[in-house]
Length: 179
Image (tube, rainbow, N blue to C red; front, side, top):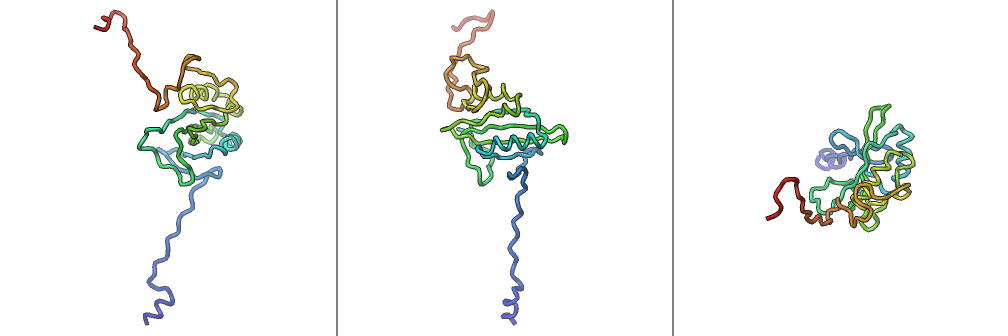
């Protein structure tokens, strides 16, 4: 009798099916605070921007950099995305469908270059300049990638985690000088 049960597989647990990941524009979807987040391979970034523009994402509402040099609590990345020191975060909006989308692109410290979004999204001109100025991430193809916040002769990028902020003495009006 025991042999008959073994032959039919009775009593054995079926392996659970692993659900297929949700995909959007060919990339796995994650969510953060109710917002869709796509982790974009750096080489796929320009093509994805064109696809998003054609899909109605006509406005970049924010573009900035992140330096994860000393960040111990970094958000987990999808298995196929290699963590890098820098990340560029791009937030887009589709007014027609009332949808927001966040892109996260890993940028290595050894080659901190990302193609510019300026051609499709002219409003990114100042955002890319600020990210360049503060983090040293170069946006290839940007029409005027010069400093925007720091003086042109400034050395370094102040929002990098290894940037020594130093101490700048400040003298307030009508306050006694250092004693």
